[in-house]
Image: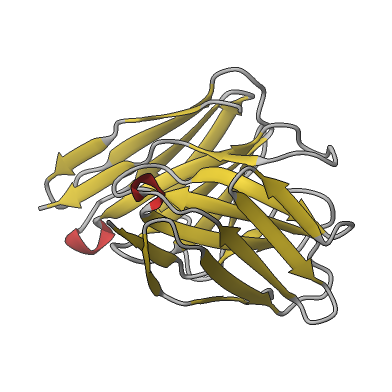
Amino acid sequence: GAVVSQHPSWVICKSGTSVKIECRSLDFQATTMFWYRQFPKQSLMLMATSNEGSKATYEQGVEKDKFLINHASLTLSTLTVTSAHPEDSSFYICSARDLPGRANEKLFFGSGTQLSVL
Amino acid sequence: GENVEQHPSTLSVQEGDSAVIKCTYSDSASNYFPWYKQELGKRPQLIIDIRSNVGEKKDQRIAVTLNKTAKHFSLHITETQPEDSAVYFCAASIKGGGADGLTFGKGTHLIIQP
């Protein structure tokens, strides 16, 4: 299947700092990427849909000024957690569609980023 | 919006036995239903998916069935092995034909007892 790379895999930061997470599609072009958040032993919650060259679409309840998304190229989307606080500590994971618009397209996930805010 | 219910939350089976995980969805327009396996601290891996134009799909020890009328779909794992232990998520897509807007179930922690 398609490969989605995500970095860093884990990060520890101080409260009030910003953290950037990168999501790359390695062997395909991803016009759309998705960012999810996952708490321990819970399901994946869609945060936002990242569209190449345009603004991201955020799910209800997700602060767009808190979670900045940039999708500047067909292979890279970034999520920046601004002014992070302990409640932002979570597992963040991106995903991308390998064949957007095609009948057999599938969704592949990055390896995830464990964020711990002290 | 779409709502996906998944049961059970935890399933423990003896090695070699079969495991069945069930999901229901609310939006009759959903027509793409993938299943993901997630090991602790790792990314979800797509293990099988089904689209609404078929009722069943099988891949070796894994099968998925879909009942559009009842709006439920199930994952079947036969001859379970220790490496099948993981959390399994079902999902449903509210858009036709693709992976957009996937809504996930809450997950099932499958434990294979040796």
